[in-house]
View 1: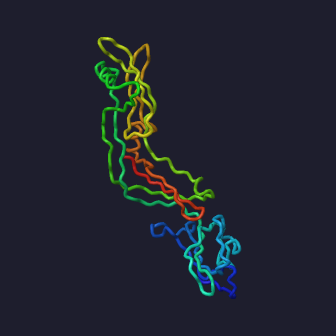
View 2: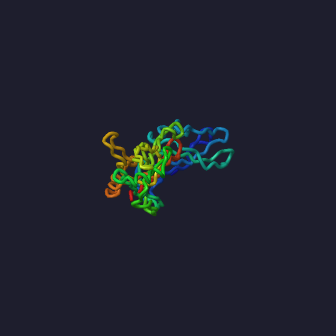
View 3: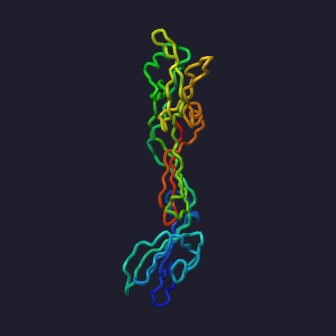
Length: 279
């Protein structure tokens, strides 16, 4: 699609050809207007070229830095000049592109992911021998984890759902936030253990510090009950206990396992989230 150039003065950029692009059509996304790019092949004197700022909108020819525009779209932003080449008569040929902020779209990828295992605490309120054995193996600085494995972590190749969202940012993408990655942690939970040694019985306090990331889900479990000192429990994992994680599995809920921000063009940034169904 060509525009008449009108004269031989190249002190201002003129569009010698232009077209529309729909960048996600090959992925099966419909050629929706919100995802459109406007591409202009331009020519200007070598000494007159000036790049636009990324805040420039396609609302008139002067703002777009050209003599004449074939159309306007105030929702399209400048995302860059590319394909610089020497032209005849001391001119510069280049491609100027404006883009709308694309609509959200989804895709799928095959990924390898390790899903959390299932563990449980041993009930230490019913067996002096079990409590004694545990107390001997730990100390006040230990970070106990559930000792009994119900299911080992599962490493699986699965189909992930990929969601692309787009955001306008004038600070290099800093204002575009990543989505939190799903993981389980173990909350702080000091616990009392009935300790029997040389026929003497006393309460041993075992510290259970917080662990930011663990590869298991577990429920809480009582570890010692005494009418004088009250109950004590080993903690459940957070934000999901074993019971609530199993509910995610049965409901087919998705877990976010990846989130990244990249520059789509100019001040437009893309967030790519990778999600898998809980297993």
